[in-house]
Image (spheres, one colour):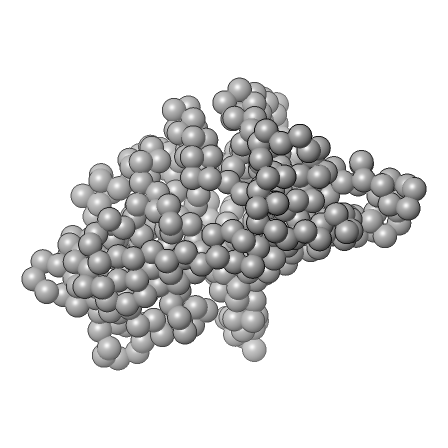
Length: 401
């Protein structure tokens, strides 16, 4: 991927930067750059500003209301908005279920769901993992039984990211126990307001609610909400996981963390010298920066492959492996750079220190959530398929071992 921008692309980058500065709430930008916890409205207000501009459907075809940008313009948009502190657009609707509906859904599903995803009216979450069925997803047990023109869903999903905010959930459910495990799975779209759905927040060691359990008790789902054919959901799921793993390179997230680390290097003192003058910090920062450059170049290769309509293949899992580990490495560097300042882990104390109107400087605000972010990043090598499973997939499918 050639990242030497043309004059037109440079102008586009400037346009994105000016729009972001004019339309992003500075308090939200500060929270993002500090790594503080974001609320539902922080995400949605930015989403709606982009929708008004026509910049939400990044990667969507114009026929479905998308921007129609090529991969380079998408890269520029992601890079500039991340640099300016914009919240990440929640991917479950825009970048995961929407492409599934475009490619596997019928016209009625497309006409109903895609405009509501674009506008931000409907917030989506993912119902894949279950207790005992995470990386081994084909072993899932959440059952959907066809009764007339409805499916009756019973079971449980877990590790449902931001499910406490969601209006809809896309679910893999078991509709048959005959044959191979993969052959009895279907893909359902479920309204979270349907009676019988319970959301139970999972409070992490960092004190934040990011994940949830979602329980289904005799939940009636219209059969029209089936995407594709019954018992053919595994094909849909694999397509969605390709979209997910391409984004799990976490380029923007890594760049935000690099920016925090650079801020500390430029201002934080260590034994009478700025951190950036300390050999240990300079060496680690340079190593991580080089890894990020390599990750971005590899991601560009897969983006170009997707643009040409070629399958991404099992090797796309490399992006997930590299990107998730790199996030953890940045968080480790930030905590080490802060030293004892990063040690507090008291929820009320952290929330008070990161309040938008607090009187703390940027370094103090970064320190206030450093331990929480470090703990949260531990899950990055599990979510979306654990690193151990990803290594096995790459060994078998990419290397033929």
